[in-house]
Image (tube, rainbow, N blue to C red; front, side, top):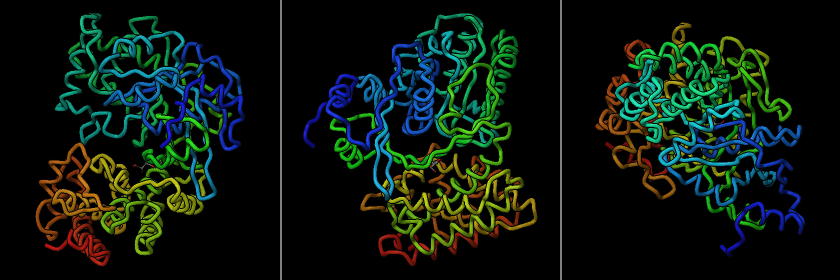
Length: 520
Ligand code: CS2
């Protein structure tokens, strides 16, 4: 790649003077020095291609420059090091078979890394100009135990609870001690705000959790119930009065950025962009209209505000994410590197439709205004978008966190309604076989061996190891994923055992590369 200037306000000014490619959407003309109004925990690719874009467009339409974003990374400083040299500027490369477009985003004003900047994060959340703390920290980022409460055995959370107790009781001795979990950092930051001017604030959870806002709200109060802090009750009272946790449904397919994507963006822009993210054209955001203070005009940018998010959220988690995960596991096992190839595979396409029609849609009590059949078609069409290069292995990560939300909730509802969810059993079977193949080093996709990427990887590998016969029983015994009530339901056990045989046979008919995965 020839060395091009790096994206920055100065580079952009020069390029704009020379005329930007029509496929490049320029920045909103806003005062980027205005005090930021949003602190976002988890400034990964999804946030940058979703909420930050809605925020940029709302600012463009209203000229309201109160909504700059302070991004907070979690596990590494890499995003900070990508964006800060570019003054927070980056592009969103939108790809479809119809072509490409590049949206330039200026909403991000600063990026902090808690391991080095925890004190700054706390200051930013306590600032009077900040009205919103939002999060995309993935399912595992909330450190929850299988039942949904805080996972007190989690070392990072346990550490943070100790520091939090001191913070609640007014000791700032550990003010610069880095938080080790997102939920720990969130609570410390809210404590700092309470101890400061105690202005109301809204926490906007943008992760694929069931009933995400209220779920995190319950988690916050459950953590305070076990906190040794003398002031925990008083702090909880302030939270109840001053902090809202609206539910949201977030939707945009955002694959990992590759060098090929960067090359495409450079061609369009004429500059290199280390913070580039990639997305499909489709985007949706449904937000419960429950805020304690102001928010950007996200509705002007196309977000839906409603009192009732549940129908949207359930449809999305069960129809889109449920099928996405099934195609990821079964697709990888059949040698498909990309979701677009998996959904084009006639066997898997049929499985996807059956899963949606036989289990997901019937499990959705209330439809709201959503035409679920049309939604099914749009989802399958979006999966077929080969231009974005979304990989099966990327979606397959963190199965122990995703399977309960994307497969088991549907299965539970079907069983409670008296139906045996055979399609969900096949999805679960595909995950079990995927775990086994990875754990035994037998899965190769696009020439690369696949390693199990999951917070419970070693526990799962131990359970999956061994012959395919008995795999269902061994995996159903993993209580961190399968609650006893479901795992001991004979209808479900039989369905999963049969599904493991069926999916193993389906995988065996695929290319020679994978037949080895189920040879023993
Ligand atoms: C995907 C989601 O990686 C995954 O788990 O299923 O990130 C999915 O692309 C988004 O939820 C779409 O909105």
